[in-house]
Structure formats: C-alpha cells, structure tokens
Image (cartoon, rainbow, N blue to C red):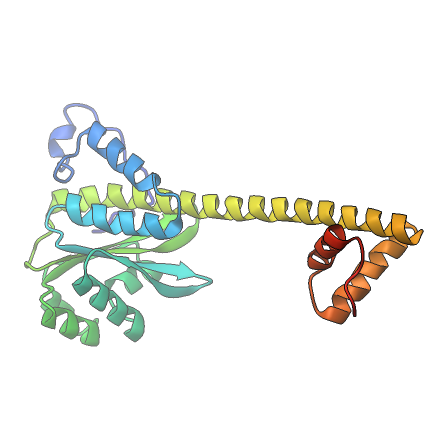
Length: 257
C-alpha cells in the first residue's frame, strides 16, 4: 500500500489493463457513478457520514464493518459506524489515540494489516482489544479534499487477509468519493446556515424598522432617537431588540422597564 490515494489514477491503454486489479464487487462505471450519487444524496453531514460507512460495508469485498473518525478543529472525533461492534472499536480507538484511523489521519494516507497480530507492537492496546472483539484484519484510508484532511475510513474484517488487491483498489476509489461527498455536505450545511442567518438578519431589520416607524409617529422623534429607545429597553429588560420591536408592533408602545 505505498501508493498515495491523492494521486489521480492514470489512464491505461487496453494492453495495460490486463495488469490492473478489478475494483470491488461491481467496478463498472455505472456502479461507481451510482455509489457517487448515493453518497452525495444526503442533505446533512451526519446522514452523509452514515451513508458512507453503510455503503462501504455493503460494497467493499472482505469488509464486515466500517467506521469513520473525523477531524474537527485539529482534533479527532468519532464520526459514524456501520454496526455496534465497530462503534465500540472506533470509540476505543478515539479514546486511546492509537489505531489505523489515527495513523491514516496523521501519519500516512493508507494503512493495511492483513493480520492484526502483527501490529501488537505498533498499537499494543488497540490491537489487543480489536482482536478480542473478533477483528482479524483491517484497511484504513485518509479522507481528504484538496489539502484538508477530513478524517479516515476504517474497514474491518473477521478474517485474516480479507482485503485483496481488488478490495484495496476499490477502497481507494471509494475513499475519494466519500471525501468529496463529505466535503460537499459540509459546504451545503455552511451555505444553508449562512442563508438562514441572512434571512433572519433581514427579517430582524424589517421588524426593527417597523417598530422605529411606530415610535417616530407616536412620540414625534427621529429615527436615531427611536432606535435608542429600542436599544435602551432591550438592555434594561435583557431581551433582544427584535423582541422589543415585535412588542411595539403588536401594542403600539414600548414595554415597561
């Protein structure tokens, strides 16, 4: 597993294709496109994470369960898992700070162990506990978009040597699709939050403008004085200016201090 998954796949001529591993259970262009659409279909980051691990467990040869650790503000956090056993293993990896996902995030973009017994010196606590849970082999991929590391995907198997060359090749493609879907979901959530915030800001401005107009008419004051009244009452009552403005619109007067 020396190849860096960040490097784009080379286009091969027909005679060169004979040396390339087949990709996963169904490596057709239609199947890969279907996986890409499936991963990108969820409307939130949380649902996207769950779709990633579920589809990984279903489509990657040798995989009995998949888990995902995320990077948030420079720290690793638990993301998602395909079953309860994987949840326990992922949470354990997060708590002790050692294991394939941790190494895939910080050390190198892929990590494979065909037999976890060979990793007891590298991950003394993780390997022992994972073996105790029935995990025999694993494969981990870093998830990244551009230069940003998003997290890592762990694939677990109850059999030694479960991940062959075909599974590794398909896993590399899958990890790239998963990273793009996750990055897209994050952007969507951020844009949605910004849009909601903008709508709320515009709505608040309109409400305060209406309240200022009422105060200007009823108290015969200018716009600045009307706004100062709203702000003073807001601070005195420890309520948002919008709440005071809504009260003015509803009653025609300011609430008591």
